[in-house]
Amino acid sequence: MEDKKINEETNEDNDEQVSEEIDKEANIDKKEFEFKKMQELGQGVLKGSVNKPAIHLLNIIGEIEGHIVLPQNTKSTKYEHVLPELAAIENNDEIKGVLILLNTVGGDVEAGLAISELIASISKPTVSLVLGGSHSIGGPLAVAANYSFIVPSATMIIHPVRMSGTILGIPQTFEYFERMQERILDFIVRNSNVQKDRLRNLMLDTGKLAKDVGSILVGIEAVHEGIIDEIGGIHEAFDKLYQMINDRNPDNFENNVEENNEKQVKNKGKKPAVKKGDKKQGK
Image 1: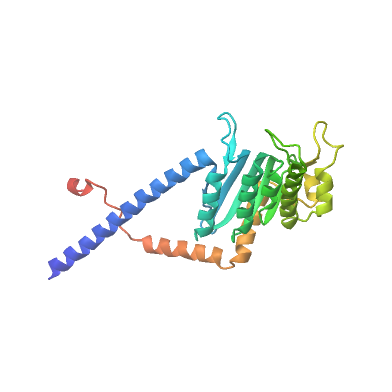
Image 2: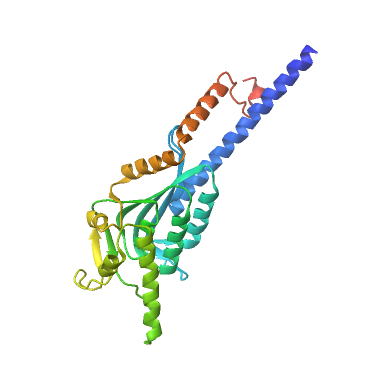
C-alpha cells in the first residue's frame, strides 16, 4: 500500500512538472509572438511590474492608408490591422488600458475616422501622446482617447478636406466636401474642449500656411486651443493611464499584488521541472 501511495505521489509530481514545462513553452511562444508583433505592427501588450496592470500599446505612424494601397516606400498605418486589434483589446479582460503613440501626416479620412470612432468607443481607459506631429485626420485620432498629451515640439496641422484625382466641378462636390468637414469638426469638438466656431476658423485660416489653407499648432498652442488636454511625454502618459485604470478599478493594483504573493507562496518548495532526458541520466 505504501509503495502504491508513493507511486501515486510521484506520478502527480511528474504530471505537475510536465504541466509546468508546457506552460513555460507556451509563455515563451507568446513572448516571441508579441515581440514580432511589436516589430512588424508597432503594437503589443506592455506588462509592467507585479503591481501594474497590462496595457496595450498602439502605434499610429506615417500615412493612414485607406482603400487604396500606398507605395511600398511609404510608412503607413493600415486600418485593416488596427480595427481588429482594437476589437480584440475590448474583448480581452487582461488588458486594462490603451496607450496610443501618434506621429502621422494624416491620410484617408474614412479610415482615420473609423479608427478614431473605435478608439473613442472602447470601454477601457485610453491615453494618446502626440510625438512629432498629428496632422490632418491625425487630429481626430489624437482626441479620440479619454485623455491626450502632446510633447512641446510636436505640431498639429488643421486644414480643410482635400481630394486627389478627378473632381466634378458641380455644387454637389463642394457640398460633399463640406459635409465631410463637418463630420471631422463634430468628432473633434465632441471629444475635446475646443469650440466648433474656433476650430472652423483655424481650419479655414489663410494667413498661417504659405501654400495651404489652415493652421499649424505647436505643442502648447494645441493645449491652449482646447484640442489637446496637456503638455507631457511618455512618463506623464503612463502615469495618467495607470491613474485612470486605478480610479476605475480601485482594487486592481491590490489584487495584482495579492495574486503575485499567492503564486510566490505556492511555488515555494516546489521541485524544479524535469527536462526531457534528465530522468534517464539520473539528474
